[in-house]
Image 1: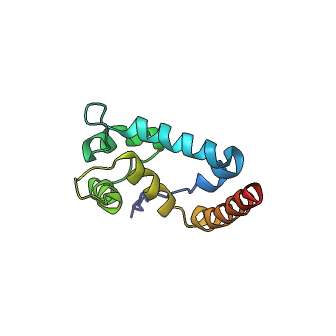
Image 2: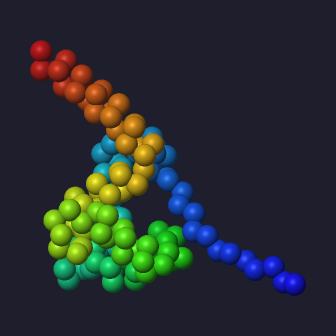
Length: 119
């Protein structure tokens, strides 16, 4: 009896690596670049169609339509059925628990530095 291959999509969280390498500003620039690659150029938002069309650019070509739609729904805070740039960035942070933990530390460090510069 032939064995059945099951294909499973594995998400590799590369945001923490990018953040360490690029720093906060560099990471935001890269997220903006990612948004620009995934967005519908006419609507200036990421739609289900634009995400599906461009998902291979990020190695997500094996995600099902249901998974892609779930990503849109998960990040769509204003309920318009698409992701604007802010919603996309927030979603990327939310999908990266390690980065979320690290971002709390970065925020604290930035606030401490701001306070030193202020006083």
